Amino acid sequence: MRIHLFTGAIALAAACLPGAALADDPKDPKMRSAEARARDAAEIRRLNREQLRHVQRRDAQLAKGWQDYRDYPAAQADYEHKMAEWRRAVELCESGRHEYCAR
Image (cartoon, helix red, strand yellow):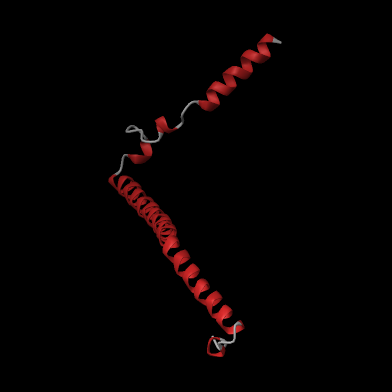
């Protein structure tokens, strides 16, 4: 039973170790030629541009959301003002002031 627990713990530890440590190995035989390094650099630039576009779209959406949030109190106050005018016109219409009925 203990051997199974020990084996499981070793397997879990191996799975959790970072694999990124080998990502930029200067001794990688595939990266020895200038052409391979140029291709790698071009791919990194492409990925960076793609990520930049993603972040800019996300930030634009967030900025729009925040602007809507900041504009809400003024829009709500405008709505409440118009509703108060409409209710007053209804009162005047119902009291016989028919020029307010056409509103």
